[in-house]
Length: 416
Image 1 (cartoon, helix red, strand yellow):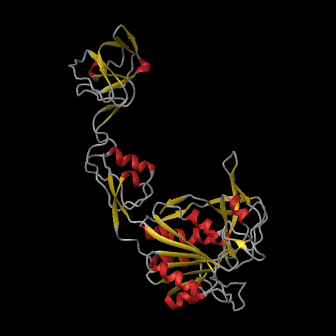
Image 2 (cartoon, helix red, strand yellow):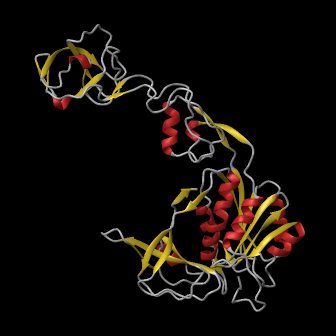
Image 3 (cartoon, helix red, strand yellow):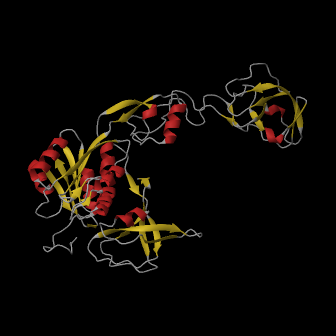
């Protein structure tokens, strides 16, 4: 892949090659911890728990109605039975029953052993304690069977998995109050640049507010991570070296923004060579060409570009899957859709490009996409409006209105 912007026509690494390099180098954290179930949401399950009981535990009514024995049903005739009592959820009926009787029963209530059918209450009428049933009833209906969901001893959830709200409910239904999860990945992030100013401070000429740390803060909001904000570090090699090497001693990952390009004040690559290792530096993607990946002491290091949209793109395409792998999460891939482009899009061949787009769907089900605005890597407003990336292959030389393009909707990942 040739970078058309480079004077030396240097060869750039493709996105797929970069992801393969990361997959081959990074291994998931090994240690785990046992946490209270109330603290487990969003964590990576470390061990697959077995069901300590049948789910459901007992035969229960699936709806409000009347329980009876199927032997009382004549599918060709209406019939009536004497109501013997009531079975409530949590308060089972304890009296004796015959096939000539039925039982008023509520959803979730225990169905007596001698009964095997529940008829919904809307299908019957009650006349002074005698219940009248219509013809053509189906036996064995509306009963939840023991182990119908999960049998005792079976796996409840396969590890590894990032625990969802449904997983939390399933574990609780089995009476599991503590669960083993992978430890959190410890991540430090910072911004570099003499031009950056912290929020709340006045802006002098040539200065800008640091947006990248707030962008990263949002993208790093994950229950699998323990995150430290190292602030803004000036373009000073000694200051930057000291901050990075200190952070590497007690973090798994360090993420910086800025300083990964080729300017005289861009020290990231130099520091990595001195205190770690560079696995790759430049990528054939736009935005986001200047990206450094490697190690800094015992920590993994990602040196992202300085422009905020390039930070977002490289984080989502490179850093996010790497962090998921490090956290022990199962591999995923972004959902890809084909959509009709409603704009003319300019592009030069050479790099895989991620344009910010607005994805919609017509009443007929067709996906359509248009540009979210100006596509400069410093234009945050278009990224804020966008709900997808329009992905244009390296060899693409532009898109015409009506062409079909590939889009990546934000925030939708699939299993692989």
